[in-house]
Length: 423
Image (cartoon, rainbow, N blue to C red):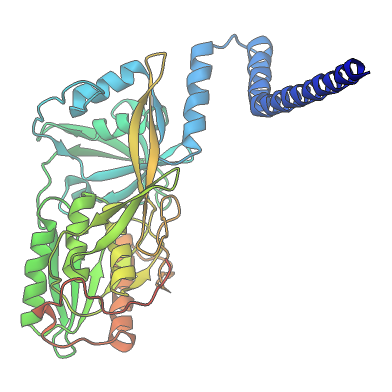
């Protein structure tokens, strides 16, 4: 009897374990089916193209287009590079491959254009002040159709960046399309090494103590230049300061962080966050701030990357009001990842996050006060002037004034307003 009972219990246990195992396998198969369902559809589309398209297509070309399209859906910077394209990148820019040494940098000039891809088309995000591109009348928002003899739509972003830079004195022909122009505009651009001041200060109303600090880029030495101008502003009894970041799409994150420290002191100005939510602080590295007031910041669609970090740091750390238009939204770190076929992908793997926890990659910084010029018939330069006028008027009537000796310096880490304000 006991033996029969033991056998019955053993059989029930085996049956139960079998049911659990079968359930686990079914669940796993269903999960696998769900994961691979898009690949089944992809194979079906590929099969139909290869068997039914009017001309026999090249599979390599189809697959390259598929990879490029997939990465283009992420952001303008993630892209697929063939082994040959990556080799050209290394050769032209001295990039460092994993396990290899970087090439010695050689002097290079550029055309003054910051290109960006959007929906497969190439546009000009910003034009560097003092560049040949600015002298030739090229403006942000213009579409690049061709560079030299290559259609822009066939070029990777790295191909474009490489084609728009080279030895100082060399030239490149860029074909531009513009809404206001019925035909293409061809411009021969000469490469120049970046020159000019990182920032300038203009006293626009000495009686009211209003000044505009125009920051063109955050290249090496920008923080030092800005510090000197803030000292000058304090001596000239500036009480209301407008920081103009429109068209600022150049420079490094570290330099922008140092410049932000002039306003917020030695503190965190942003963080870098990976996919798992792990963050690393970016600190200004300054012991004291150089401006004790509450500035306003003017941005537009050409404000990108380092300038966006600077603006967000002042917004959260000094309660600076942001005026103008939504910035472009470049706020991620990219890495090159190798593929088994010898190709590489450039992928955004970490994003910048403001002090209050807001990311701006792909969305941009939204202004607290929108200043959009809508008058018809105005040239781009006149629109910028009108927008600046509106920002100055806003500063004159609504922004709080600071003490005349604003550049005397604030205590370490002290902020003008600890209240949280979202981007």
